[in-house]
Image 1 (cartoon, rainbow, N blue to C red):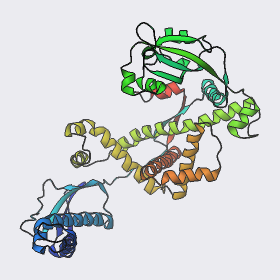
Image 2 (image 1 turned 90 degrees about the vertical axis):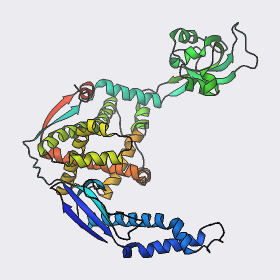
Image 3 (image 1 turned 60 degrees about the horizontal axis):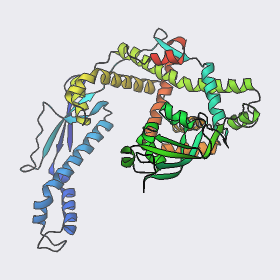
Image 4 (image 1 turned 60 degrees about the vertical axis):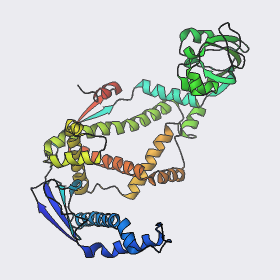
Length: 451
């Protein structure tokens, strides 16, 4: 095997990979022998077919597979050993012809186009101004969290009369046009629905004020337009629910009402742990701090968007655009050349920003260690649990969950990228001039709306 490189310009090169017979002959022969042992060819017992027939049937495909494998391995090894920083992946050369004739030749030469990362310098100083938006925590946001806490820690009681947000249990019976039960029609006992999920106001008003054993006739399709929910409630097939017509009779059997918890020490202990919070002011302050901590991630996300715009423009990277468009088409089956052309500027900026981030990580020792990755996964796991009201979990349990998440390659890559972005954001915030501004959540959301 032999590989040579010819630079076309600063950003493009051609790699020629030459494969000779001695490079693949032994492995091809071995695979043919293995095929012979198990090949089922008419007229011969397994393992006894002549090698000539085996070669006739399987020789070319085995040769092609083995040569392609060698080419791929050779390319990868060359790029790693020579520390060639490429963009995308090698593509069959557009202008240099490969010499590949599996029918008549035993030596082959493959030509590949590669794109090289641009060399550039990017100095980041306090002269570089980047906006940083701090999202103000409003009293409304704090109250919404309190409402969530009291709802999760409340209790359910039986009620005598239906009011808004009650759960009503009863029996649905299908009726005919005259208002009589349909013979062999749908009858569903112990069906449950929330009053505030009834979509038509007139039907909702029929349910409000009803008591146990009251009977109400109404059109269930008007009350519950979502046929998936309707099918689930009536315990029938979705197709049947979709074709329902006419009224059902609903007989109330019980009424359940959720009573929110009181805002007191018992609630404080349930949410944050015993004795962690002792007064209503401490409780609100703790909530406010948790919300602020969560909003920092959104602020950093926006900061990186603005930093991307700033430094992609400042670096003004020269990229091999023609090659990159070819590569994007090759690796995205669902994208056409026209779609690539239309979206290329955005894709190009994304790639340039990734190169800039990689450079910052490498030059400033911002690499993510295994310990940092695990700690980040634990933080992410804890935030997820906090959304469901679990604010304190044993560290051993958090670590178990985090390690499980990191066994998934996609999740691990996602976590690594998020932690790397966090470190890049922290570095940039220390080394640029922040134009800080406090905004409301509404004002912050407006930043993402294109004008």
